[in-house]
Length: 121
Image (cartoon, rainbow, N blue to C red; front, side, top):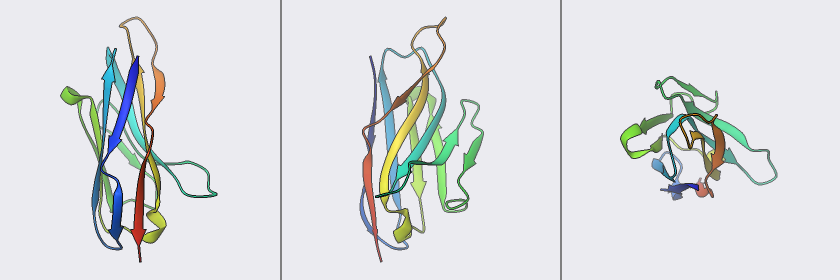
């Protein structure tokens, strides 16, 4: 059993900052890529940022220069530092990870429960 638990969401004024965390726990052999997605009301879920286990990163154009994804492999945790937040960043943010539960298994995708980020104007 693998769980992803997010924390750090909340309400912030435009221009402010938040830091999201997502900790993976359970039967984990290794974690490949970890990512953050978000879903705003009546919109499709979209990729915000991804980081490989080799710490290569990629970002959605809308957050480049404002958000930073990082990970602590010893803690099985991924972070999303969000600066210069805008009202359009308001969404539920979901953690995603590709996890191997055994050395011989392929990775499976797991999702967190989501954390609400609300940016007021």
